[in-house]
Image 1 (cartoon, helix red, strand yellow):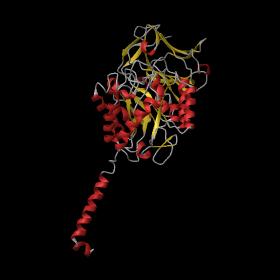
Image 2 (cartoon, rainbow, N blue to C red; image 1 turned 180 degrees about the vertical axis):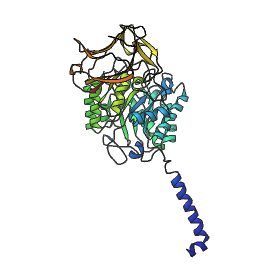
Image 3 (cartoon, rainbow, N blue to C red; image 1 turned 90 degrees about the horizontal axis):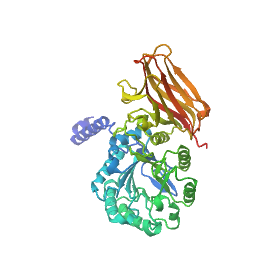
Length: 483
């Protein structure tokens, strides 16, 4: 101790060491975005081994996420709040930021890249992976804007090449009869990848393939000569089936790494219904092969592939009734839940038609006491609302709803029924007044996988002041691939 007291150098060293320990304790909770508490922190820099995407430990990894729609049209949903919400509530581990080149996008509005940068930084802060997508579409040949692509990816790789979170998708969906893999796409990719690799030597790069990123088998005879390259495969469950899955298996057998960087639950036009059976077949296929994916799309566009309804807030925090049928399905797939809502109506659109209801006399009105949102369906005397909803692709069907009954007297009642395609059957008949109540009903097995399924709510009321309020109507089932 005497030695320490007499030596000013040692005393100064110990003082500095003490300060360091104090600051370490003070800031122990302020960890960097890539610490072990995040998905990227646990998995680190990705690498391609054979046909498989792997983490830093060389373990196979499957990323599951959402793709934005056009940033210039639906960029309000691409922000720090929504990305963190999707991570926390849906279990999202990947976000794809789709920057259209044409269609009013980057070529005419270069400031669109600011929204890309916002999304990338949000994903880095959230500790998830992010795809920077050069989203060609009507400009089917990627060489049309090759010089702009090279400049863009030079800037992006300079800014973000040091982050393990970043994946580059250099041409979304090459298309057109003269746009071939060897003649158009590979020469473009050789130049763009070379630009990226000067700044970022090893983050994963996804390359689109011909015929809207479905011609992955053409890669076999003429692959790219770079490391950590994957090839895009895009599908829509209502249009593409076994033939395309067989093509993927062929490519995997040839050590061609496949990344499903865009897929939808609908037809390839983005609309015309959701296909739960076919979607489940695809998801099972991808899961079995640990193929990573991004679902199209995080938007409220009036098409069935959009995940959100117009009631969805641009900053996340969505209830199930803020999600479309596609959004509901993808949310619970991502969460790993086999039983999930496949229809949810909160009446927030203020229109029965948006939920596909058949209505006699009922209204949609504001209710400050509503269990969710601001609007509810109101049934007065002899009012009915019914909903046809195919349960194809689902079994063990349940109905959940919230209701309140006011000023009922005598034989007044609220009747809940279901239809199996031939006969209406009663689930419940309620005659007691009540504040908001949430109730769930298990519906008999004949409701499973039934294209003619219906539900119906009827009010029989004697007093003008009597009313039934209905909200948050959900149909819940277990996903199945039964035909």
